Length: 318
Image (cartoon, one colour):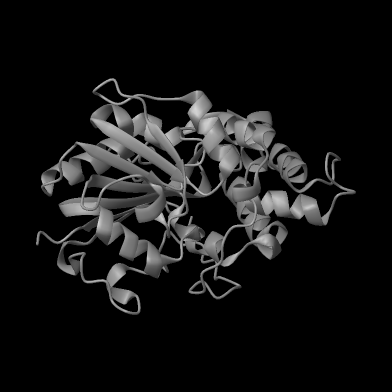
């Protein structure tokens, strides 16, 4: 299937905070943690290997926009110490309840902090972070102050890894594969598209529009432009090693499980806020998509994956 182009309907260069996740209730945060799955182990392995191969060390990990902590719990066992930061109070409460430990046996530390206030709120010393990560979060950052904070906290020679799940893709082995993919694309473009914010479009475009440190005003020269690395996987393509599956693999997902997953997306939440009379009915945006997927495929489950983006930045060693 040819790559479909979805153009932003908003100015993707204008910072805009997400109004949904940071005001989640405790029950919403718990549901988010339960329904948002882990990232592929192949992605984690690739990120950690690029960090190590470019001179990175494994003492202190900082995860920014950590939400309930799903990603940092997977990465922390590779580091002596780990800190997760998120501006959502209930997200951090949920993260702390779920816990997590590092390779030293120390508990992960949790802080309520935005990406733009890390030096003050993270509790970490200047130039103390080996790897700063943000998992499906950087599209909500005000990038100029974030890069300033990252430059202050990341050690010379350390890394910043911004990675994300982007869009959902149907595996070619699905019955009526192209019709399944069209249903997913139509849902994104026509149904929840009007409820997208600039950050959502930055994410859907695999961070192509994300402001890089040398593009900010003033330019942030602490990161080496010549060592910048950008990776994209699964954009309508089977990028796995054998060309028969996606990078990181695919999963057979029951439609009811897919309903729970897509219901945690902020645009779906905003659609429901705009259509309260249709929520929890067959006209609900996510429920209607499940009905269409069942109609075109004839199945109660589908083999799916998500696109992946990874940007690696190296702190200049001076």
